[in-house]
Image (cartoon, rainbow, N blue to C red; front, side):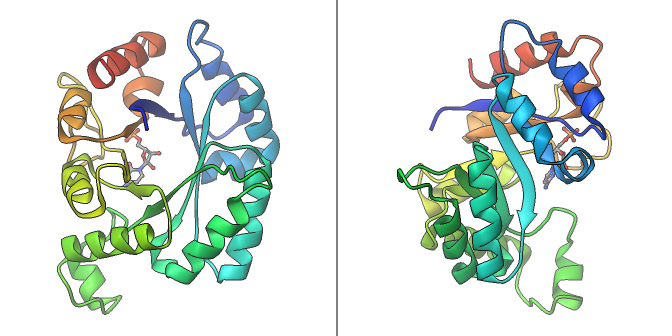
Length: 232
Ligand code: C5P
């Protein structure tokens, strides 16, 4: 699996995202479409961005009973996305059903990755509200192993966790990592951040970068800087 930069297109309308992507003439970045844009603009936005030549990570984080997830994944697979995700908390049975739903007749399927524990969940909340009485790092690694057992391709994690995930789940188990900032950039609301170069050193396979590119004065230059630092 090659390293790549994925731009988090956190826009709320079709016009904004198409306007943003139209700035890219010489390259076709891998883009992440999240719930906000998908719920606002619908599956058509996926088809349109795909037709512009971009790869798409559809970040909808599915979590439901196995049969429902299987059927929903089947629809996403036919949308021809390149990567999608689910919550590992849905159990191994749900993750296996997701793979079944995603796999096309010719045996191909989008890359499927799992969310372990959301970074917004603190260890204290997890222990006290969710009654998961373990250290959060242990829970994250256990969920990553469950994802691997179910046949998934990898997990979303902090760049700081990527090396450990690779140690435990194998070097070919994909790590997709947000929380990336340039060394001279604004960190915004992210707490634990790394630079693209550091993420490369730690072994992230894909970095997800939003505002450092989308809010830059020159987004194409910021994207190129990210690729140069991360992919080389
Ligand atoms: O703008 P920024 O680079 O912070 O965007 C990061 C993207 O990654 C956003 O779409 C955010 O929702 C997502 N994300 C994250 N942290 C996680 C999981 C996803 O920042 N733990």
